[in-house]
Image 1 (tube, rainbow, N blue to C red):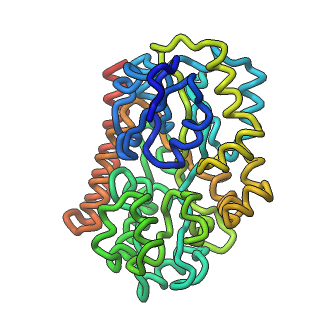
Image 2: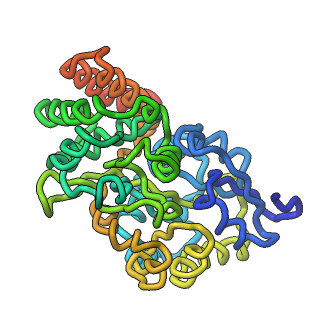
Length: 371
């Protein structure tokens, strides 16, 4: 239950990883409400900021947030030295993913990226390459993460593994050769996937895998330390052994809405959440998934998490950061529908890829109309 007499109201997402540490640390300062994962991924950020003082958000919402003026730039509230220290301490591109148009809009409270999750008793350790994934899929239940925005995120991550980061410019999503190769690989794996998995979000995929034998491997799924021990986690697959693991950065940032007048106590509270002590002790002990690199290499943190962090740190360090322009969230949803339609055979691969390219260019055109 939230404390009705709290000075500030915050919104996070309804999973222990998103809620428990924040609620435990809040005292009477902040009353934390929750929304489903799907709301975190796609609900209009300006609507949330109109109702809450603090919002836990996904970095692709920044373009939308900046266009509507609903967030307070954190470089107005914290010193340049503080921001630089948090940036240096955070794993991979987590801190810079919340920087946009020369300002810092959120701080990386939590770090996550797509990694490989397996039932070691059914298929052994997570495979290192996509060739191994295809081989396993012929004899064991293997699924891609395709629900909601994740069909496009899986598409993008495989492109990264193949050597091309998507969205290199506003008018170019991906080269034809890479795009067709990605769709071919996804189709090859999805053809063998259990039907029930196609509508499951990452949490539900991990639940199915940990509770039943109906799913043995998700080669690309957002990592949740809460399933460590029940599942074996490893770096996302590469094309060749030792190559770049293709993955799209996730995680969460804590932002302060434009409606909020932060008190010194609130700013000090945020500082504590970002501190090394909180990141390596308090947050991991309250079901959280810290963003500090020190936590990902900490012996105690890893011992309690079945080495989840060490086994996936390389993927997090090299993850791809999604575009953050104001039309991106709608594009991500529409593009995922196109990927699913292509895998279902409703569009051939060339038409599907052309449609993705068109949607991406149009998402930038909408931004130009707004500005």
